[in-house]
Image 1 (cartoon, one colour):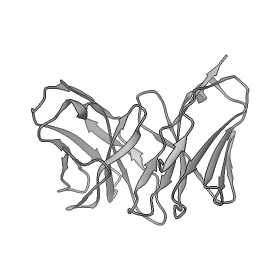
Image 2: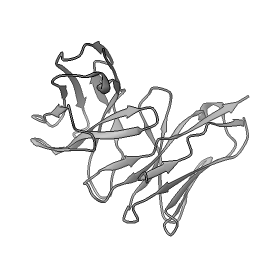
Image 3: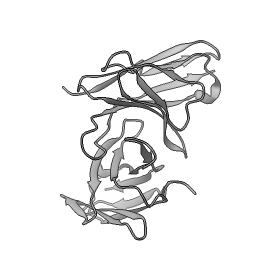
Image 4: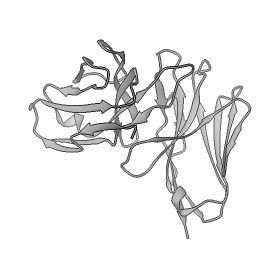
Length: 114
Length: 111
């Protein structure tokens, strides 16, 4: 089954404790992206990657890091989480053939930073 | 001004009703337009792309007005299962495959 998976689905942590949210897709997609979703603000892009070893900042990259060492994986790293990073996070992937293609989203990770 | 603006709703309609959502976008160079559906606390899923000539998929009709930078979604014969948040999505010409999401319009269909 074609899918994007994220882990963990729920996480409660404390300020400053490094964490990683994993994202994996099995569709051989080149493009992957991370979003955060907050009430009243909609989905905002954090980082994106056009292919292995190619990443770039989205609209709200501060406090986050990413890496793309393999095509299927795109982990999101919070080196020193803060309460303002409490949010719902989505990973997405797509294959850039032709016009902007459908983005397939993972199920989301709900993060609470105390 | 937000790049993509939507009325947040909620729109409360009875089953069988016709309901329309509107969306405006600010970047006239945008080329790709979509409606995504998001159920409560779940991931967004593509509902339909929006083409210049307008397009229909069953009970759903999408329209694009480039001159007014306006997108619409019409749902006919609403079902209880249509209750969700509908996200208007536009590509940003400033970035490869960069999509800009509206904050969504919430629809509640009641029996």
